[in-house]
Amino acid sequence: MARGSGIAVVSQCEDRHPKDSKREPGWLQLVGVLEASALEKLAAEFGGTRLYIPRTLGRSTVLRRTISEEASKQLISLFGGERIYIPKDWRFSLRKLEWRSRVPALRARNLSVARVAKLLGCSERLVYKVLARSTRAR
Image 1 (cartoon, rainbow, N blue to C red):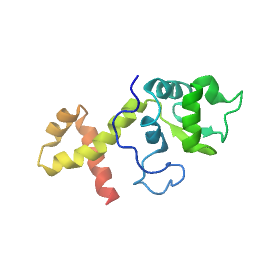
Image 2 (cartoon, one colour):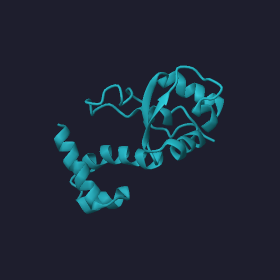
Image 3 (tube, helix red, strand yellow):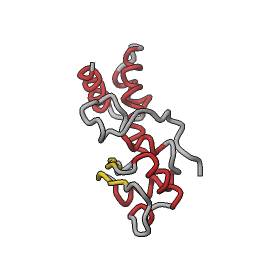
Image 4 (tube, rainbow, N blue to C red):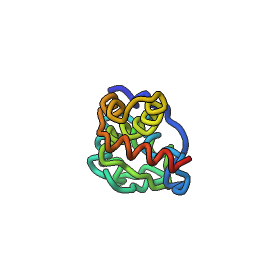
């Protein structure tokens, strides 16, 4: 299986800087490091919750029971001693990140909301939400 998704992995864990909305969530770093199967297992087991990542990999850690030892060590090297949010559907979360960057860019090219929604495969309502969020963030 291929690693990651080709998205540039940046920034720091959201849990470290909850007030800084410009930082990418911690799970995004995992997308560039862990295989898709490990991400799917994490989402199935812990999706929608914050997961504590131990500093070391013990015999009975929940990570070892959920994902491979290699994947567990990679996760610990990134986030040992911290809590990170695990999305229920990491693929959908990646799509949302794409929408947040592409919607304003497409609208800046004078495309209609309907055309933007069609190009991105989302609803017009979502386009309006993203636009509202992007103007609040400025």
